[in-house]
Structure formats: C-alpha cells, structure tokens
Image 1 (cartoon, helix red, strand yellow):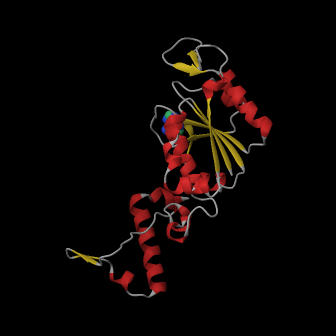
Image 2 (cartoon, helix red, strand yellow):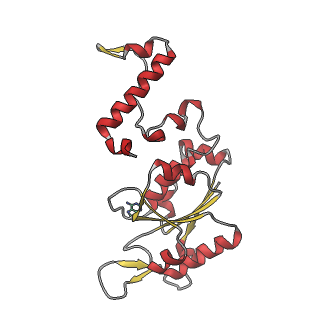
Image 3 (cartoon, rainbow, N blue to C red):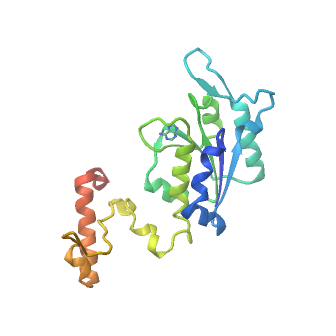
Length: 225
Ligand code: ADE
C-alpha cells in the first residue's frame, strides 16, 4: 500500500511514523508513506497557499491551484483508489472505514487548514471526506496520522500474534473484554478465577460475555447495528 499525504505542515506529521508499529511497517516495506509540502506547488514568491474568502467573513481558505498541481502530479504517476479530505464535516471514522481503506492500493490524504479548502477542490478531486470526531482540530494533520495508524496496523504482516487486530475493540461491533497480567494477586486485588483455570473454551465464553456486557453498558449504540 502507498499513502501520499498533502500538507502545509509535514513536520507535524513526521513523528507518528518514526516509532513503534508504523515505523516497523515502513521498514518492512508493507506500506510507503510520502509527505508532500503544498508550498512546493506554489509559484508566487510569497509561497501563499491561502486567501480571503469570497463574500467576506473571518478566516482564510486554502486555494485550489497548488492542491490541483499536487494531486494532478500524483495522479499522473499512478492510479489512486481514493482522495481523502480530512475535515470535521466528513464521515466519522470508525473501524469499518479503516477496514475498507486497508484493502486499497494507493490513497491520497489531503489535510485542511484555516477555514478549509476551496469547495471546488472537494467537488472535483476529493472522493471521500473523513472526520476523526465531533471536535475541531487546528488542521487535518493529526487526523491524518490517526487515520493512517488505524489503516496501517490492519495491513497483513504489520501486527504479530501478540498485537493481533482481530481481538481489538470494534471488530465485530463489540468492545474488547478486560485483560490482566502478572501478578495474579496485587494488594488483594485478584484476577478473575476463570482466566487462571486453563479451561480455554470457558475463558473464551467469559471473554465474549464480558465484551457483550461492556458494550451494552458503555456503547449500546454498537449493538443496535
Ligand atoms: N480537521 C479539523 N478538525 C478535524 C476533525 N475533527 N477530523 C478530521 N480533520 C479535521
């Protein structure tokens, strides 16, 4: 898989890809991640990427031309399955969206800033709009990093057995059950007996029940689907 991220702040995006699971996925060549600085696609000397909005009003709008140049250059080099725009008014990210995107070959992620991008970018280039939640970030970069993390950890070979994605919360629309590790008794706070029993069918049944109970109390909306 290849992910191209278009941003005005590549330095804000770098560190999540330089540690732990994402770093290893890149090193193992299971994913390629490329950053494109929008200012490299601006022709004027001021490197201006935004301007006042037509009709007046507070806040600058990102101009279409540099974004067009960057996306068109990438699209002339290979086919992209999606051009994703990170925006608070997009579809809220969930595990299902991450699962679907993890099956794609090449995607572009466009990070917005200020009041966002000129609507014509959304009308003519963007194929999918994603929000990471009902709150406003200063820009799309942190959202793009979150999106990439959810996608990349699902790629075959990225996670090993100990970190398997199959038992994560939200797979099967259930939250994950509680987990425990050594010691089995800490200051009198003990681990549920069943987990120490060695009876694996019983352990599995306990985990399923706990996952269901946890989902019912914390996120009943997940059970409605
Ligand atoms: N840009 C600003 N706020 C955002 C959000 N909640 N999700 C994705 N991108 C954003």
